[in-house]
Amino acid sequence: MNPAASSRALETLRHVFGYDAFRGEQAAIVEHVAEGGDALVLMPTGGGKSLCYQVPALLRPGCGVVVSPLIALMQDQVQALTQLGVKAAYLNSTQSNDEAAAVERALVGGELDLLYVAPERLMTGRFQNLLDHAHIALFAIDEAHCVSQWGHDFRPEYIQLSVLHERFPEIPRIALTATADDATRQEIIQRLALADARVFLASFDRPNIRYTVVEKDNPRKQLLRFIRANHDGDSGIVYCLSRKKVEETAAWLRGEGMRALHYHAGLDASTRESHQTQFVRGDGIVMVATIAFGMGIDKPDVRFVAHMDLPKSLEAYYQETGRAGRDGLPSNAWMAYGLQDMVLQREMIEQSQAPDEIKRVERRKLESLLGYCEAAACRRQVLLRYFGEESEPCGNCDMCLNPPQTWDASVAAQQALSTIYRSGQRYGAGHLVDILTGKATPKVTERGHENLSTFGIGKDISATQWSALLRQMVAQGLVGVSEHGGLLLQEECRPVLRGEAAFQARRVRESAPSGASSVRREIEFESDEARTLWAALRQCRRSLAEEQEVPAYMIFGDATLKLMLEKRPMSLDAMYQLSGVGDRKLEAYGMAFLEVIQSHQRQHG
Image (tube, rainbow, N blue to C red; front, top):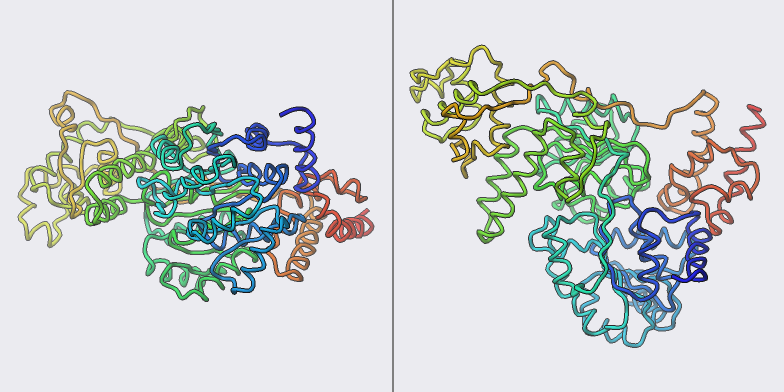
């Protein structure tokens, strides 16, 4: 980009969005797309993907058309852009015919900077004819991983988007995603006809997120301890696998005095919309949900994401945990996990109607996720390595902060493998642990397993440690899981069983509290005076948001409020120097926040 064009890009960034400089690859992406090039952008949630197409759309003549898969997401984006003074609109099924017609006239009349549209509408002949009569700046394909049949969020209509290249070859396209391994990247390139596009691969690291995985032991109470110890009063998301568990967990949290809502695809549309709106606009609400919730959520101040069940893959886990801390402030990703989770996920794969090839890929992805859960080293390293990125130990995950002890479990592994074999390779972990620890349950005695030579052979090892050992053996491929949840021997176990190879296991922390590796992740206040000003700034923001019926973060995010707290601007010029304060927001809200700060300083000066 020539100096003049570069200057225009920075001016747009400063005056519209309130930022002084681009981050990471943003400048190079904006330059490439603004000059007419195609791009594939892989950037983590919270990394600033939206700016990569919004700024070029404002720099290029015409309207940027953004393909967005979810109604909630496009509505939030348009609302946020309108707050910035950008002429943005959307077309979706929530609008009346008159409303949609008005947007279409604005598009053809050159009155829009950005238009958000669902892929289904984009592919209609009528809409493409409309595009023929409009001046288009660029096409942005958001959530581009939806094109991948191997991915966790496949959307059939995305495959048809290659028509944009065929019908509008001169208009630049930018495809963006926060979640894609190498195979998914290649599929995006192929299916969207992006062979000549420049690929921008930003780091997948989210250093502000602390990753923690705990062994399940009364997971509801573990969750409650985690939230109370680390996020009392914060907004967060709790993911559960089933609708029933979602409703039960939310009801239980409410019974414990928390502001908890539930969300899943089985609720009627009005309830889903009401709960989502309350969560997005409110503070301190915990949303308990299935994965039906989250993809369209653009709330930057979610301070934690908790998983009560194992997700399907590391891609799904990365995307779901990425909904925490989009504003860059400290946040937590916490997961409670047990072997039964893996058994359940494996059953779901085997019982699905998917072709064998897709089942094979899903098994491999599940095994990678299991390896992450059972890692004895830095979780961030394991996660980033999955996406093809190497890193140093982060010093900020549970494994780094509280390194696990390991032990030579070679003999114990042989005992476990022998028990699996002698009992017929058809029983789950709980039954095998009962045999190993000599627990004569009705199930054990009914099958005569108290007579096995391995009955009680592992009495000196706790049931918890045996369960952990079996999980780790599954994670390392020594033991497999049958369609019905029984453990069975794999070829890889032979060297251990014969004593030709050692087996090192991670020792479980049986007495450690569930949130041991987490710390309070909130804004630190130097004094009660600073805490008082923070509360006043938040109250000002809440009042303005309620007046306009928009989420509070659309007025100013926590990161900008934190700068107000630190810098204490005493004039509009000083306020304008803060990151996140652009022309439109300074004009609309600057004086209100300035008065709060000035009043506070007079009282506490």
